[in-house]
Image (cartoon, rainbow, N blue to C red; front, side, top):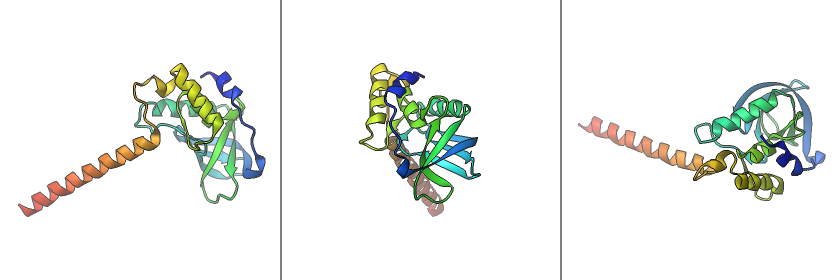
Length: 174
């Protein structure tokens, strides 16, 4: 992963909007943009990245995105959670203490994430640079955004369920 790309786009953190804590343990990396951590205060959290959307595990690039995050978090991290969020599942950002930047930015610069906030210039810049260099999912002929992938998968599942119900109805009527 070319960290120099991400460092040139490193954003300042507006501390007034975030609660920041040290990550003392990473329990699980669910996919490229969701991790479960324990903070120094003892809170166990599932953090969905606020600024980036990584490929789903069953999508091209999904496993590579998860491995990128898992490898980076082994080196330590800091979690920043949007103020006002309650509960165990939160939207936030995990910062790599090794690379000194958000993991969403590292993923975008490696070619494994799209920005979730359209006006996030930093992530968008990283995505454009990765696309230009044909890194990560940008090596594919037709990269599909994770949100589109989820919609397509939902339609396929709905169609599959309808077909099963039809088959069952026909079998019951016979």
